[in-house]
Amino acid sequence: MTFDLNQLFQKSDLIPVIIQDAEDRTVLMLGFTNREAVELTLKTKTAWFWSRSRQKLWNKGESSGHFLHVVKMITDCDTDTLLYLCHPDGPTCHTGSRSCFFNTIMEEET
Image (tube, rainbow, N blue to C red):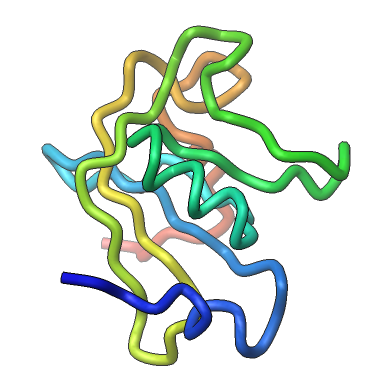
């Protein structure tokens, strides 16, 4: 199947990408991507992002060795957000945690 990448970037040059574990569907992180990063992800099968703070492309795992191996890429209904299903090589968060989502703000009372 061929997907027209132009559809992803009609509203913005930078879009969010949700990273989810391909095995258990745990949400691992949220990043931002541009067209070049998506093209590199498709080519290398590892997750590339656009760093808003450093203003440059980065391949997750390039310094830590904890690469995110992308097995499936999905777009949302508005074609302005991506979901990558990945097999991580190790912890995803720079803190060493498996996921970047571990600070609870609100929890349903039982």
